[in-house]
Amino acid sequence: MNSMRHKAGLSRLPFWAAAFVALICVGILGLSGWREWTSRANNLKNAEVDMANLARSLTQHAEDSFDLLDASILGIVGRLETEGAGPATISKLKKSLENRKAGLARIRGLFILDENGAGLASSEKLDLAGYNYSDRDYFRRNAVVSHQDTARRRAGNNHAAHCRQRRALAIP
Image (cartoon, rainbow, N blue to C red; front, side):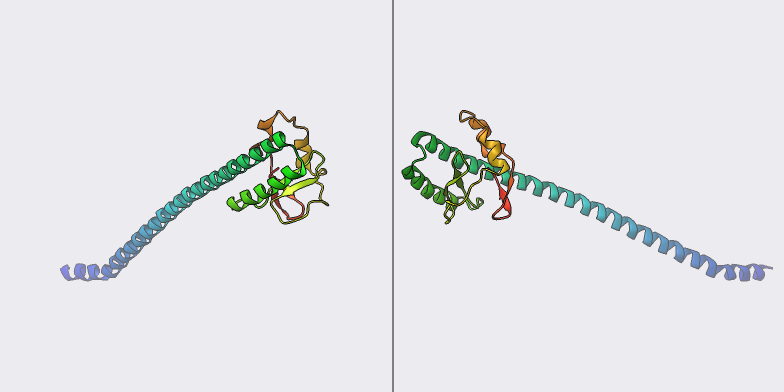
């Protein structure tokens, strides 16, 4: 009888071995899945932090560009208000615009327009005689601003508009 029990135990040995191997495989798969899931979660968290840092950096870059542009524009407006818009002043301001543009690599071009939208001076090497900007939304929006309202005239208070000639954004 003892030998029968021994034979019955031996016949169940492959079942228990297979069950043990299957349990180990399930455990390995579970640990691998858990490791991959936590790795994915960490990667997503790192990507989120990187995107937030990039957004902050781009915002700071844009704000710095507006501050540089504001300083340039307010200086030019001040000169035009004190010296007038005569040919001698416009010639000096054209040289000033070219120098400011060279010093501000972020700025593509600076333009001075009269009250009717005609181009007076530019940092670009082009003749503004044939250009008139009075039909542009940004010109009409800024034309209604009184001369004493310098806070409204600041570039940072205006919305970017599309430039028709270059197909780029312009900040009036």
